[in-house]
Image (cartoon, rainbow over all chains, first blue to last red; front, side, top):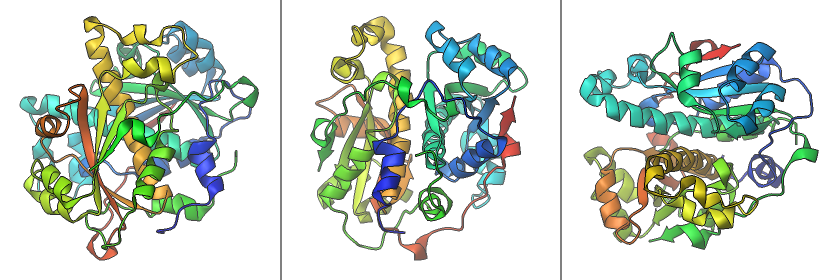
Length: 200
Length: 200
């Protein structure tokens, strides 16, 4: 620890990694999906809330079902990806806190009750999305490429996939596979440190 | 690309990385802070929105100012960290889209106007938080440790630090430094794949 990773690793994670919407046809195995989870779950969340929930649409049937709720431009991208994950968050994550925050005295209390609903929602969104960031980084660390997408009907996905878990809410979706370098766009510009940072 | 990173890198990023609230006293240089930004800015955001804005509180004065808005348990953690970053998001990020999404025809239109305010807010929160996840991973990739915190008064921080940028909203704060291994808690439990994943 305490040393930067080699340049090749920084390139794979950040500098040369790209968003891919089209993939080269190679399969992604179930054990690779579990490996993404086993890395991403180690990332920090507030109080170890761990609100992320994932549905991996891998069968043609599941991908078609998800694609049915996507904006037109994303339909074929979802159907042709090896896997497309629904990254969701559990707005009742606090029910699991006694298990995940055993060091705390009555951790559920901080988020229990109707008057804490808005705080739960915000916290699930913040921490579930952080886990979404870890998901992308974990997939890249494992040599895979990602195609995150927001262009779909969240409420329709929730009604279709989470009828049995009404507190689970879709956040974004993300294809996973081996990206096709022939079908990637040129890299868009990025802001300099001076653009959006202040050092006090 | 397309190969998993070596185990030592996966350990540094995920498996052995820990949240640190107390640091060993070593300085973090301004160029290390810029290096975090230069990695994290490469991570994907929807339409290349890049809503994250960062205020790095490094001087004793800036850390005391931030600590003044923190919950009691976080005050000393902030003051004693080498740097504590306010990770914020610009809810008027669409003003910059012509620069960052030059491949799109009139990208501002998708988020312009009063009737798009709620969509901007949601999108800034989602994509700004994804960038917060990239921030933590970038710092770890550079050999640094992070101590992310939600326990502070967001509105008070915004009023104090963003009076000149009313569309910037604090999301979470994150200390950065070299963690003190003597002062870290035992790792809390994590969920298995079977707990929170579905494979369809």
